[in-house]
Image (cartoon, rainbow, N blue to C red):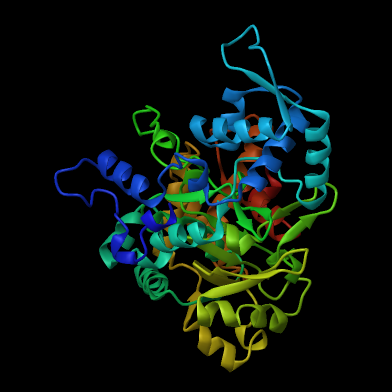
Length: 460
């Protein structure tokens, strides 16, 4: 099975890449080629003994299951599961019960020997889920859909961000940095839109990707698919559901490319395999879950680990494009490092990293306060999204009487925040349709913690 997978980037068939084919047909062809469904037990790439252990853990958890549900739980084709059950019956691990009242499929439960077998396997690996993908298979799929194969252009970048107010020069800097495949360092005052823009960069990365539920490493399953991170592709724009899971290996989930953001809570342990001693299950670290997408370390310099230690953790992955992880057993293994890595901070970059590391990053992009014209456009967008008529006089009051008499910079987050607080007060006073200068000044005072009122606020 592994030999049928693509082995180079030239074999990665993109959407609509096949002449004379529709987009859906091209997607079908790409998925069939990238991850064909196993039709025989030996096609799974995972030892039969591990699959038997996994099936017994499912039965230990559920008690009695029909073969149809075992097929769904293991995400394997019926002939594969039936072949596995035949072997397990011959080894006296499972026994067959008559079909239940709801269906015609045979039901299975563990024998006493099978129960002991399941409990013994649970001590080594507590994973209960779809059958894992062998590591070599995962690497081929990951490489075929690499985030660095997608070519970004200036026109596409501007089109994708046409609904967002952002300086065009800044947008071009970001696009070129993403195209490079190197690490990216963005910095600037809090509220300048660094995280907001980063969260939307995945829109530039194009086609959907296959994410495995779990990877088989050594003799355990390393869980990779995370519903909190990966967003499955479920339907067409017209609402019709595609039965794509019938076309490719169901041990994968068809997803949008992920964007993972870690903040001040990040520790070095979060970048290693996570082992839960209670469930005896192993989870992939965040940057591996971000594979084929974007991983952003936000609020750099505010983590519970020194910045130098955090930077040193990324030297090998950035330079070699692979990383090394260690299982609880001590087994060390290599995985591809296929992410766009972004560091973001509102602190002075010169105090966070030495010149040697900053040179490795290559692209250092400064986010600054928007121009007055761009701020006005953002203000109008926020007014429209809240159903508020744009009031030029209210904006003049903001520029001249509030910003003009303070040392506060105009940041792109302020229109949303100030108008939101002003609307809270207007709703409370029962005058939601009358957003005036007094409400805006109350919002300003609450937002910035400034005490004292102008005459407008005193008459409120």
